[in-house]
Image (cartoon, rainbow, N blue to C red):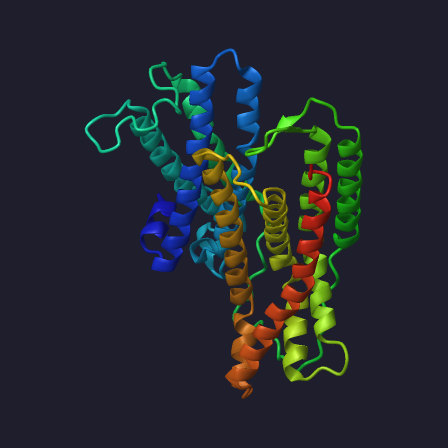
Length: 387
């Protein structure tokens, strides 16, 4: 009940972020229900149904990532001084965040069920009744238990991830430090070596699997020939390596921004980037992994139109949209964490142009580091898949 009251009194932008989580949950739930409809209509094609279910995992992971990122930026569930006295400590606020996330995802799952039944032809009286009946297994009885189980996956996983995700430490009034005072630099994230090693292992696995490819494999959407499972495993390892290396690369970007006799804007931007490396590095690494996959697919399908269906397009759109929105939510969280420092700088007389210049330099530094890396990874992972 408290979570619902907090949702009613939230800012419109906060509600918009929650609606984006509900929309992503609706899209993922619809994909899961489409997999169930295909399995019901084709009971003998169990391997194909399992493959379709496996292709729902990337949209599911992207939706959960977006839900966690939005929960971290929700001001209603942020720990505040004085709330522990009324029984709303950090643990209780985590529960409220999990409930709020679960409610948003549950709303999306219900919308997905109604939309699925409508396009399947089970609900009548609305436009486009049964427009996709053949694709969704119309005419076959839909097992209610299986449908509800699939629809509960996104709310349960997202709520659990929101509850156990560590929140950033909130400063209390009077805890702000003077920006002019010397501060110890932020420690470097320790995931960069592991991420690089995982990318190298993924590329090696992909190359080895492509050299010994036979006739069997897993069918990629839009490809005529099947792809060996080792190639897809190597591709997934490269994407995971980019995600792990993201914080370290963001920290390195801040270091590079401060080298070679920096001015005030470069010092401020580099120090802020080093402080925010853990917060924005991992979502940025996920975006780079998705972008490298899109670039690799574009190079593979160059000169011909891929044979992808509407469900594949929906899944790809969910992955791209959720990762970009999660990165935007991480940027909002970083801005909230910098609010006290920004206010202190303005009180000290720092011009607004200096703060804007530092923000622009941070964006340029990240682009110069992550852009070429994304292109290089895309070219490397696409080489074994070219005919």
